[in-house]
Image 1 (spheres, rainbow, N blue to C red):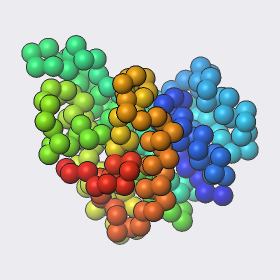
Image 2: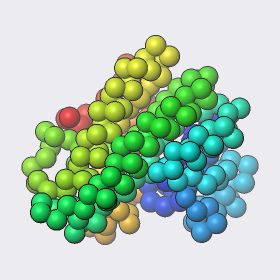
Image 3: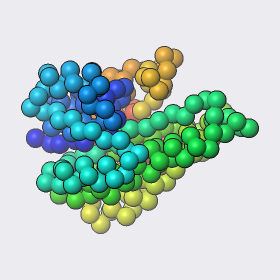
Length: 232
């Protein structure tokens, strides 16, 4: 049975990843900040008690990441999905109104935490068969695709994680670890809002298809949920 570790697993895209992988007979390590209040996730656990395990993890707390890695040090993790992310308040993410504390917090979660997760869980990933790290990013982090301006905090946090993961793909190449970035599309979630173009099920189904077709030669690439390459 293959094992996937998913951050931000209590809602939206993360929750759908948990649901789909559990249905596909994967063992799922589902991480979220407050497991006791993660009602939808706990309902999934009740349906698949032998496949889903929940762990408390605030990815902004790097000591907690290290502690969880120690707890799971004996595991083999085929796939790490860095899904946890935040979108800063729009009132603080516009020119002349920048909330610099929110910017630092967004970077801590969107940009720095995925690298910390890779560092902390390197050994369980390296000894697996699939050896894959996926980070959920956004086309809003694409410099070539930026035609709308604004969103300084969110765009920079995603552009930042893009270059971090690109470097990681190079640094982990001797260990044959595949590291890729995925744009989930504009999804109808709490973060994406009600005007999103696709459902979480459509997004995750597409991303899982991309993940299942990955080879080591794809490491360092930036894909959309439909398999198209996204320009940097």
